[in-house]
View (cartoon, chains in turn cyan, yellow):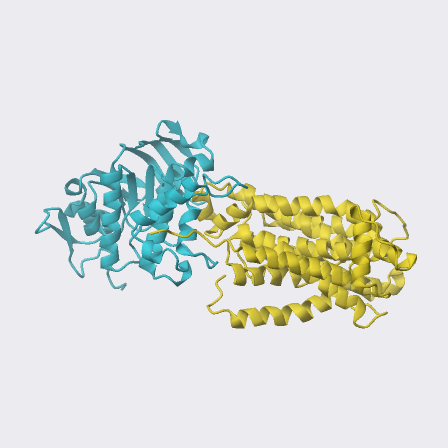
Length: 268
Length: 350
């Protein structure tokens, strides 16, 4: 269990501010969905929380320690990241890829220990990939690869799991399977989770708390009911929508109204 | 269900070790004077252990074995192990299947250094090395340093920039070599010596050179093994490696520096032997899979055996004429690699 506190965070690449005055506090065991249009700063925020980008201004406190004072190995033994896609050029098997998650713990010469194999085995079982563990990673389907990468992240035994659009390349069956798995890691194992999401309806169904980014600022932060309103979505995504309660769960369900995009006009 | 993590195949060490030892003895028997294998065994045992075989051989043979042939054969083994190890390091860190020890400028730098040294009317000897190997060593490291710094932008050294800078700097330095060769008359440059360097030639003439490079080479190969698991993590790309706790820029610099140092050491006693550092790692990856903890030591053993055999053929096929060993490594290496590539059951992933 670990908490995260981000205070007055600014970040810019070479050309212009990408994140502007972000204040965000995530309690241990929370599951937070990051929403926002392309370019709103979701991926950048995830990279900052994982420590591979350094903030221009402001602090990121992870479990009481300032991220900028931790070295990479220290961060990686607490925070794991599942990026959108991985290309692995060599013919590693799925189980070998999962074992890579033990990198922060493996000593240079002694190699993996029984504890490392145990952690990797547990991760493989949690992710439900025991049946494909011996197969070559490059010969797996997109959905299977995503689960292997998730298992690799779990082998890190992180306190905080960051996911960058984890379901964007998957069919709906794999999308639901992945989100169910992520939610059970949260509820059953107490893992703190922050995931960038594109699909507003799935975010509404699976997350208790949503943070909506707009042009590098936090536009809204709260429950799905508070964040996913017709006004906010129309404004932030420049798209006319109708929001109804989900017929079974009651969560906000977004219905797109075609032909009503704000930028959709023929130049004269 | 018991899950397997990788494959430890004991037989591969036995096989590679046997092949290397066989190659070393085979290469020791043949040469300008052929000395029988049993005699070599006896001579070596007399030297190293408590044996006292009566000498049924000419005293001259013993001098040839210990003063000429063994240093050369061991030099060839060291060069092969070094180039293959450097090849694994460069392919792993650059994630590029065409990477070899020469890809970021070592070869052209060494070639130019050696060529310049050949024009200088100076006769220096340093640890048993003449001016040419020393200049080749310095040239290799200087050109990699130049490439690394040219590719460096804002605290990072992107791989694409490094490959491009390496290619361009190599082309530029190669042009200088060609220019010097074109005006060789005025420079008093021995063209045959330049070709011999550029095509590879094990120029070990005594134990001094072996003694000088062994600590560097063996030490470097052992240090490389320390980076093996981190090289596996680099397979995920630099961002993925960073997520796994790797200090990417630091480790990249260390691995490139180590690979370059190994290459420079090899080049200083052998000139530019091609193919070993490219094909040995690929062959071992086809046979053993991509885990660098296996790949590094296996490639070192295989590379050593490969160059020992290639050098044996280079100096015996057309004796007393010596064929450049780089010609032999290409002639054996290319068909062998193509055979492996065609006969592996599955697509080769890089």
